[in-house]
Length: 269
Image 1 (tube, rainbow, N blue to C red):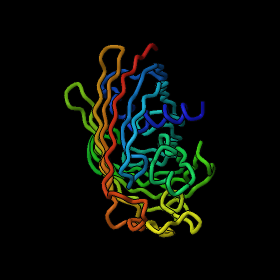
Image 2: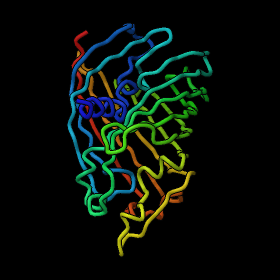
Image 3: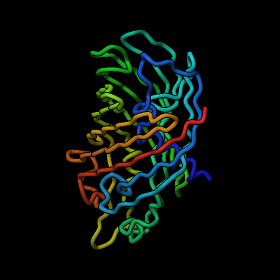
């Protein structure tokens, strides 16, 4: 059940469904929206892996537009300070690592199974240009603690700092969002994915210990629209790992990682 929940939340977060399907600011927005749907995501086992998986998960679609707590374009978040030009929030996100026990390289080295993750932490969002923080270009500066769920090593696994530029626009009946981000991470976060202990080393794969520092660059685009009581969304994300602190790990088989997905939601209230 925990795995299914993480898959559902991560599918929703990865597709950026609330961002893509946000109603136009000229439309009346309800305080609550409820729906059910299904999403599908395909991508590598982890950034740097040359093995990929795909999964399908149910999506519980819940949007709440309260004065402080909201579940909207950036997931679940607490909005504590907001003006026309900036906001301070506490946000929650999730990422899925599907069935890492099936990864051939990690299995051959007898490495711990990777879990899916929950990320939580503060963020400052600054409007650079556009009509509002939901339209146009903004700078987002989130710092998040990361917790693993469902793997062999559950609990806190490190922290991330991920400055990003976010552009949102309406393209006719479609909502469009683009994110370009750089990531820095703590040593324990990199160790979780890329370390090879002395006991796991082989003649072909030496022991490796990751360091803190630069963790990669990524671009993500998403599209979504409303079709009556239905919501449709797509996303694609590409990560580049060149120059990262862990790029020399034997577990990094490629410096490119592409992930994509789609979702179809029926909103019944």
